[in-house]
Amino acid sequence: MKVFVRGGQFFADGFSLRDSFMMEEGESRLLSYISAGGCGCALVTIREGELTAQGDTLIIIKRREGAEVRPAAFPLPQEATIQCDGYSVTCKGGALPEIRISGKAEKVLPLMHPLSAPALRLIEGQRQAIVEVTAHSAVGRYMALIALAEGNIRLLMQDCGGEILCAGNEITVTRRFDDLCMRTVTTRYTWRGDAFDLSRVVVCGRSYAPTREEMGRALLESVMAKDEEGTLALLSDDITDARMIYDYFGAILSVEAPDPSAPPTAASAIIKKDGNLAISTYDFDFDPNGRIENVRCLEE
Image (cartoon, rainbow, N blue to C red; front, top):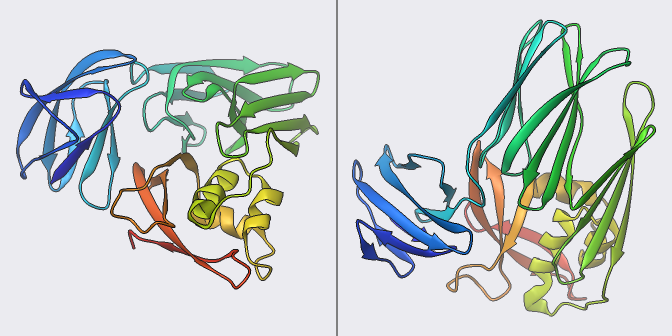
């Protein structure tokens, strides 16, 4: 397996690595690194074609050819637990965070972004038990609310942003994206007694006309920001439902530069796939007006 290293200077068993190295089935190597966030080490092993790492300092991302290793942005994982109304709720941080709920009913809720320092709090005065989850993420503060009714568990909301404000029955999340359009997305959640109404405002800090080679990247960025107007502006007139595009790509954690061997119009993103982080690369077909009419995942 070819193992790529990104995000710092890496060493395998003490030998400096440029950008990748090879490993065989059953082999283990001690990886150490120096990065902007600090230094660390971990034993990595290939078992049944899967790369795993001991310890909490590395994040593994699947690639079409092999895997990629990056330093964790913060110590991983961490856990917090709360008992309430016949339920036990545990939030596990890490590269693939989740909430496990047991008791009157059981459920596992996968969460969006790698998280650290999770904290749980029971919100009083509601018709049903509601647990607030807060944590740190690479894109800002994380917040989720979970309703625990008799035999019924619901994830009411989850979001990340540089700023989260709670006032009365409203939660306002503001997130700024370092993308081509310098978007700021403000999402407002309004509590209606048993669920949230949601409204979103997207403001672009600059007007940007992407080249043909940048169209794919621009589309992935607009999907990540859930910018419906920006998404549809990049698509052929035959495509009128942005939600269909959101469903196709799923949760995009970040937009990445594609491998140099990819076509010039290709774009890559880190997504969650089959319970793991993976890099997917897409290429695009264009209509006579130069807008995207088809998306092809090059990993399929």
